[in-house]
Length: 137
Image 1: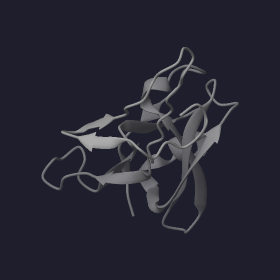
Image 2: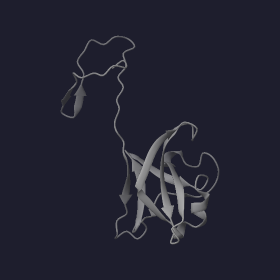
Image 3: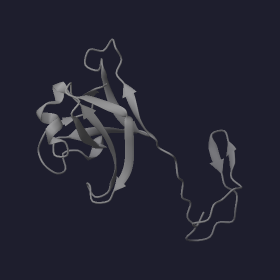
């Protein structure tokens, strides 16, 4: 609270209760951990069988051709390695977003680094292909 940790909040019926005397300009900042993870496609759904989508908290991510041109040239022969998933804030990407990075490889064990951006931010740079679900390892 006001840039200082507040430890006296009470969780009641799903609400965080903060009892205090409020002053003009008081500020409450919440921080929720949002770990990036893979969502595995259901094997009985043809379009997602053998594929993964990447999410971080409630956000779905996608790959854009502008960031991953080599992948989109040969995507049918690449598999995403989602267990090496990293996330980092990129201030110069789309006005500032948390991007996800991982890699993909083909049958010749040639690796490509991949960048994923939040799905709601795609198509804001250059025209090109976009993909949410990708073949996985």
